[in-house]
Image (cartoon, rainbow, N blue to C red; front, side):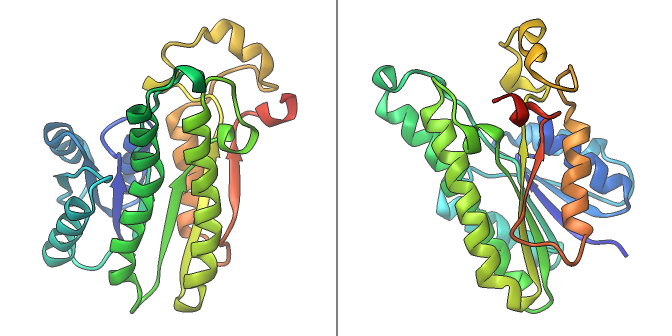
Amino acid sequence: MSRLGVVCGGSRGIGRAVAQLLAQKGHRVVVVSRNQEAALGTAESLPGVAHVGLSCDVSREHDVQSVFETITSTCGPVDYLVNAAGIIRDALLLRSKSEDIGSVLHTNLLGSMLTCKAALRSMLSKGGAIVNIGSLVGMKGNAGQCAYSASKAGLEGFSRSLAKEVASRSIRVNLVAPGLIQTDMTAGLREEDERRRIPLGRFGQPEEVAQAVLFLLETPYVTGQVLLVDGGLHLAL
């Protein structure tokens, strides 16, 4: 049965891979991105039924409310929500600008909270599934990534709490925590050095994370879980 899936941060990286996989499975996809052109381009590239691309700054509550009102009025109630929108501003805490810390927390954590709140309104009557994209860094920490780590650790706690709140309404909430995945965020890393720490010996691909996301979206008896997709990197930390 075809579902309506909303993928925030769906125009690049892991979000784009999730959007592609959902479309391949026959679902209708709404690609949400801060970049309108990128959202439309991604939606048009997806196979299958007519997909939609919409622009939204997930850190702004008015933007989020507006875009979800548009989604429900034109496409119907949301079945799946995937929160893959995220930014990174790496620096040692002593050198971090307060505005950069705020931007990371507002986009990565508050943004996901706002989109979940908006999507829940259309899920309450018939259920649904939410997958938030966290990070191994949110569980293990990493020097130079205090703000990013805090945002992803907060997202894990939020996901577990929300799972408890909405389980009685047949709404499931889970989190996927990727390790080192080949995306824009890891482009500056020396893969040759980093992959020595990974038991599987390589960076992951966005499509591999998307498979984990799809599993959590479609598995009806799993909620409040954190699924690591890291090639075993957590074993070495």
